Length: 175
Image 1: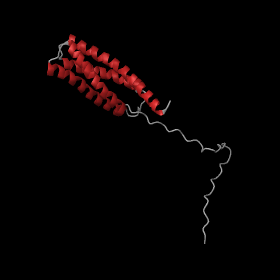
Image 2: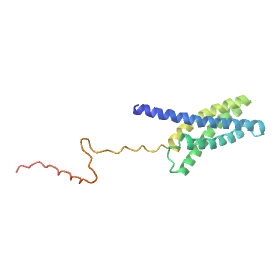
Image 3: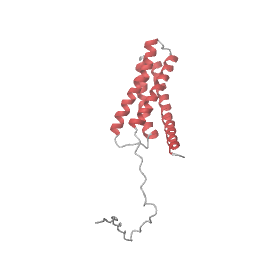
Image 4: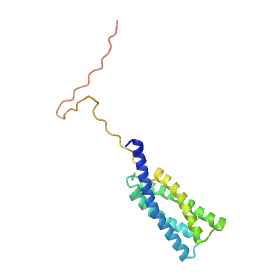
């Protein structure tokens, strides 16, 4: 496999793992929002914000310990601040679309709420995928392979003396 196809394979694998965690988060998000919509008197968008926050908490655990478990873990405070910041932007995207549908267009039936919730999650997911992999869960630098001895040289045993390098040859000068 060439370098390009290896990179594509890693990206495909990352997208699949991100999607698995995201699918679980989406199930949590829909379950909580629909429960709150049907069992409480909370306004639709407020209930949806609560559901999104619950899903974000579940997703962080999945992303950190499954999708991006091999990524840099040296600064968890930075990671958490960025994760919460980008998650909040995703929350605004998702709930902004739901808000516009309900309060801008009057689309407030259970089916319409879920359709626009799904649309909002989809758009917010694209943003989250890009921001999480770029800023939050940074890839560790790839270690350069150590250079072996120059081609055509024999390795020296530990008990053998290492020969001194030959002095540079200087051209003769004419007088």
